[in-house]
Image (cartoon, rainbow, N blue to C red; front, side):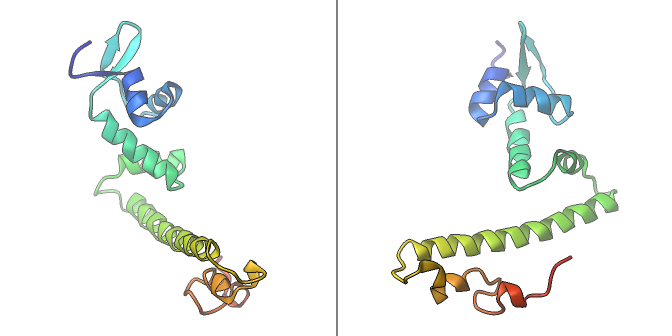
Length: 142
C-alpha cells in the first residue's frame, strides 16, 4: 500500500471507530476515500483529524445534521453561524451541569452524612450557582 495512505482498517484502529462507522460517515459526505487498495478503501492521513472533529461533535451531542452543517460552515453563512453560537451556549450549560455532578460525586465519595442525599454540601452541588436557588425556585427555561 502507498505509504501516504491509510487503509480503512488502520483508520478504524487509530480512531477507535468501526469500519461500518467510517463507511457511514463517507456516505454522509463527511469523509472521502483517496482510493482503494484492492477492495479496501484508503484514506489520506488528514482524515484522522476530520474524524476526531466528528467524534468530538458527536460526543458533545451534535446531531448528524448539525455535524454536516458544522463541516460546511463558512464565513458567509450567518444563519449557520448563529446556530453554532447557540449550540456553544447550550454546551456551556451542559458543561456547568456536568461539573456540578462531578463535584457532587467527589463529595459523595468521602461524605459521612446520613443519609447522603440530605447532606447540605451534597445538595449544594445541584444548584447552578453552587449555593443559590434550589431547582424548584429557579425560573423554568423554555
